[in-house]
Each structure stands twice: as C-alpha cells, then as structure tokens.
Image (cartoon, rainbow, N blue to C red; front, side):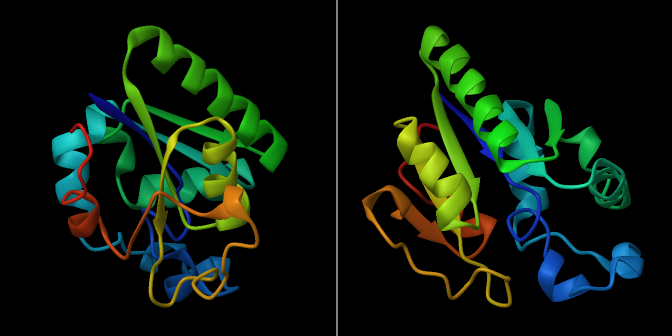
Length: 160
C-alpha cells in the first residue's frame, strides 16, 4: 500500500498562482484540482511535508482546513531538514513494507530527494506554478511520473 509525502506549495495548494509575492492574500488560496477528493480517500495515508516559515505555512494549512484530512503535518525551515525528515519517513515505511510516494513540484528539491532515497516520485506540474518551466538537469531530478492535478495522480499505477 502506498503512503504519500505531499509538498504544500504548488503541489496541494495553488500558492504561486493565488498569492504571487503577496502573502496578505493567504485567504484567497485554493486547493489544486482533485486535492479534496484525493485527501478524502487517501489523507489518512498522507503527510504534508513543507519547507518555509512555520507561521505562514500554518496559516495556509488552517485557511484550507487541511488538518482534518491528513495524518501528520511537518513544517521545517530548510530543505536540508526536509530531506532528513523524508529519509526518516522512508526508513519507517520500508520497515512496514509500504511504498512511500513523494509528490512535489520542484525537480531540484522533492523529486531529487525522493529519487536519492529510492522512493516513487511524482512531479505536480501545475499550470501557473512557480517551477512549472523548470526541467530536470540530471537523472536524479527526473520524476517517475508527472501530473498536473490530483485526478491524474489517482489514475497512476500506484498501490493505493
């Protein structure tokens, strides 16, 4: 069975499109197409793993009522800590025999981290996303799958 490590910004939430650089517009955030449907079905197997300023990330999570859907929320201030948290999650999942699927928008962050840990990687390539045009620069940045919303994610041949 698959468990999911979900990035927040431009993966679950249309952050760049809805906010740009204006964090005062947090209340206008929207979830990515299919995210609610996905979380209702698979939220108990999902962890939000996000990098950023904790108070801002928590505000986004609260605005979108994401706590009620997921098993855990982890917010870290740096990408290095995100990678360490992901590695710890991967170790626990391997012990239990479950697959861990990393879903994120950045090939140079979430996808590369997941590939380095030999996990299943899915790039959420949102139209209007901040990193939409970024292309993989090496094999570690190539995702196993690429989708533009959660409806597409749920059609992938994963062990849901």
